[in-house]
Image 1 (tube, rainbow, N blue to C red):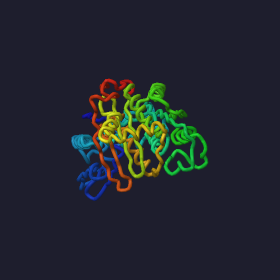
Image 2: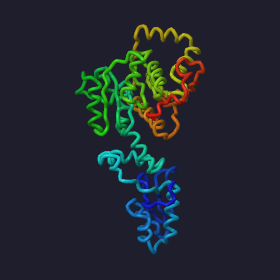
Image 3: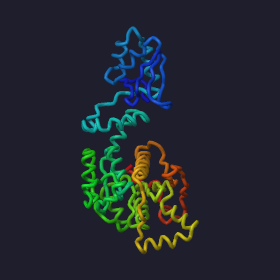
Image 4: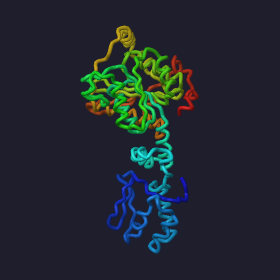
Length: 375
């Protein structure tokens, strides 16, 4: 944290309330503080903390109401408390003018939790990030919108279905006039209109092997994968798991079955993988072996009974998992844990996922497998 601010600025995420004999900064119990100001002296100072006035100019402007030492002490206290930071440089050197406005609220949040330097760094990192969304259905379509909202620079969306009327209860990328159109075509149009500053790559392709997944990851220099496809059932999750382990790319997966939503995350070399979880389930419930074999042999597709709000919730939960990993915002919640939520009662449970020492997929993967140029 810088000790001497040249152009101090109140973080834009904090509101300022000039109340009777006091000033309130911020909102809520966790991000608010009150400053005693019975004679209105600090009410003269705070409007000048706009990033446009230098510290020297502020000191001159508030004389004789506040002394130089009082100004410096007040600014230092607000800075150490996280309410004031150094004014950021000209953002148009990093972003276009529309991007500065579009992402201003995003960066206000990042400033709130990590400071102005991190805000610019993080938004720039997202701009240079490539994500792969496998499946643009109920969860995947909401993830695509979330990535566009965040300003992720390249969003690769893969699907091979057409828009159906029954999709519209939960798949936000599509609307009635586009029933019958290929999903990736409609998704491309939607994302481009929603945020022309991001690049949406529409991939109409049926995944048929682990090699297919790996090829797409490599072709588009993917940094993070969302495994949200449900076809071919009994295969796709395994293929994604193997491919991500081999190239060292983290991913999250999720699905909804009736009222129950599930999500998990895998960081190669650092966590249990999907195979670990499946093998543990098969050991504990041997009858599932026959079921899995039947699903694969007969290409059984699970009936869909997911509601739109459930898809949106799980998609934004997974999008925050992406942020936690990509920005280092906080540890991922689904690493070594399977998340389950009941959308009727909204009860939530985390089940431990244990990395198996003899797992055929991840036991020989170390943390060094993570692709350094994509972190």
